[in-house]
Length: 141
Image 1: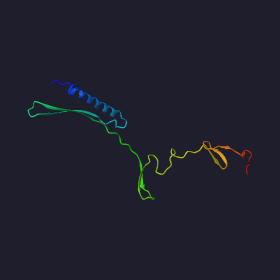
Image 2: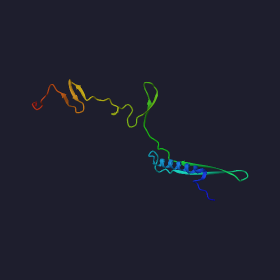
Image 3: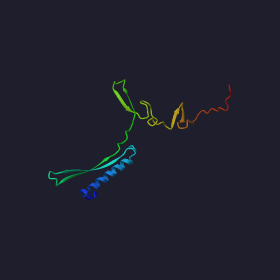
Image 4: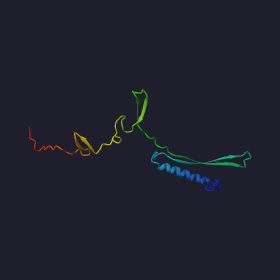
């Protein structure tokens, strides 16, 4: 017997294999899957004959076995809200529940008025000074 698998089912087996191969290689390149897991392609031919044994139905299937995506971990603060008495669960990642984040803190203006003087918030310098104190002229007490 000489059967060319490229010609079997009018070329459909070859098409199914190529799609399965693409699926497996894509899964192998996915950084969200473990690199060490083995992948597989299974070509299955199932033969079912009639009672007279002169005819057979052949079912052709191509199955893939790929690595599952790695689970993604997170952290949640859980507890009871003392005001409402209801349970809560809040994702917080690297930040503790109730703690202010630098990324979510309110924007500080570039200048603030402190004790009647304009202060540059980035440097801490007093921008407009009315009363300049010369510490070089101060005496030791």
